Image 1 (cartoon, rainbow, N blue to C red):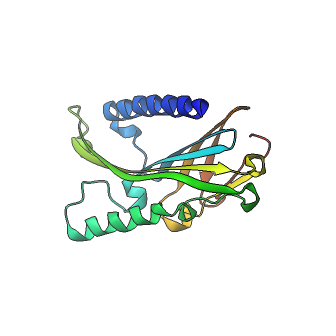
Image 2: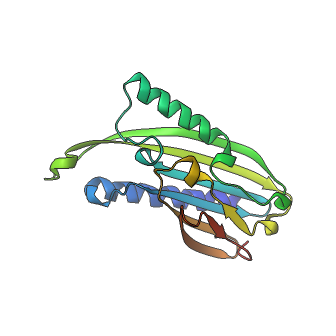
Length: 184
């Protein structure tokens, strides 16, 4: 468990650095691309998603209208059931032990000459799921119904870390799965 905690702390520092860079260089912001960190240790596996609001609800501004607020609530509810986002092999016998689903909103004020983004609001969907598994070695593949659940999404950049090492994946709607056979 300490391994997963240290990995997630590392990811959080890395993500903070990315966000700081994104604030300085707004042109690096990429719609259609979400991030996923997967970490496993022993019989525990965790998934942490950070996805631009535009990929989920079609906008990134702070929701003010009743329709926008309802859309965000509906999609947060969709994230409550991880099966809408990803699936694990049933023979791994993984049971959800903890989840966190939230919308993170922040206002960036960029004083550079980026006219289109002079003051830009960003919302990001955040979801974290922790599982205890009967057989993590049976997790040879992760499938992502995420792309059919949220058709505005185009890609997930995945960082996968286990006691064996780390590997990166780019997952797209045309091939919505990753093969992690032998990586746990």
